[in-house]
Image 1: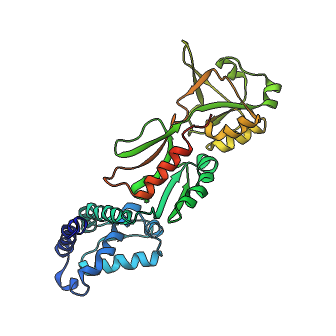
Image 2: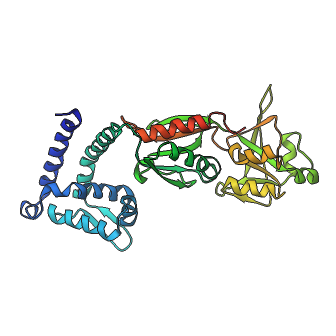
Image 3: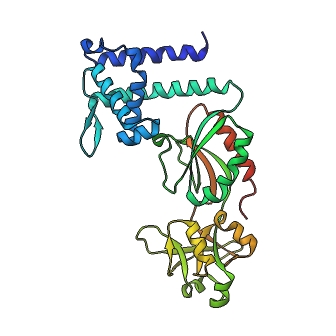
Length: 336
């Protein structure tokens, strides 16, 4: 017996035992336990996603099919597994126990299957990725056609979102993020450094003057990233030599929670925008935008490294490895 096949034997026995222990023996006879493995997996996805709608979307099935599977599992087990109301759902004690005690088993089965699939030698399968909107549109999406031509057996589902997703809960294989640090529970591959820049159009600078020291920003229209109700401030420090860090309250006629929107406002001459370098790279090269206070670094605005991130697992699927290697090569020079 192969090592992979041997490792699944205790998992099978464990799932079988758990279903029998939470069940009513009479009702269990109406459906073979062997038919219920996918039902238990779906219950676990329901627990992770928190709603029938989200779980169905994650599994690629209808909400009705999701509800039917859970009802079948409840009938076979002989106990309620989910409490439903018009506004919410939650697992019962029995349902949560079943999910908690089988979660690691299903994760191991998934890892074993991924390792078997990788034996095919050709990277294949679905790769679900989440990337911030501006970074994705400007830097990641243009690279994907080339990657898929190199690896035609791989399919990609890309979510463009500035929301910091729970990768495991929402079913993502990989996230690309510009952050300062990565949680210890995740595996991270450094892709390249990234910087925060102050930029403005030449027409704005001709009209309002070019700042030469951070204090000059107080008399300018500053286009900033929305961060709730916090009073907007920028902190700058000299790139070379000695000097004090300076923190300034700034104000302007426009703010947004998207760096593309800030870049477009700067291109329109509305003021000086603080954006990640990957968002302004092309317009700086073309001369449409000019870097303001180039001898100063903006601190704490955005992350200073670009990472590919995934939850820790003993086995990293080959399609993930190939995509990370591809990104590291294509983005190695950064965005300056």
